[in-house]
Length: 91
Image (cartoon, rainbow, N blue to C red; front, side, top):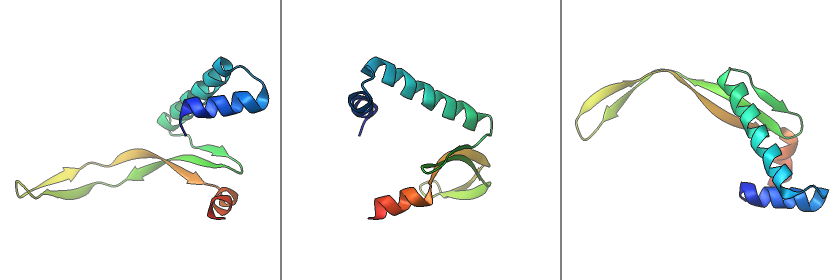
């Protein structure tokens, strides 16, 4: 499902025009991104959590050149679904 399809579905069920729904969805994504950039997790009870995971520094190998490289520690965004969400999908 794409963002446009989500917006159409929300507009259809709520009666709000699609342009407004798209604006709200885009603003939601912006707020989540900004929060994660600043190190703040976003918790949506009953849905899940958008969190920042820290990956430790590690050594990797470049097989074609037979060399090793160091991958520095870095942060990545992740989504952790709520237990109720996981149970609904598992059905």
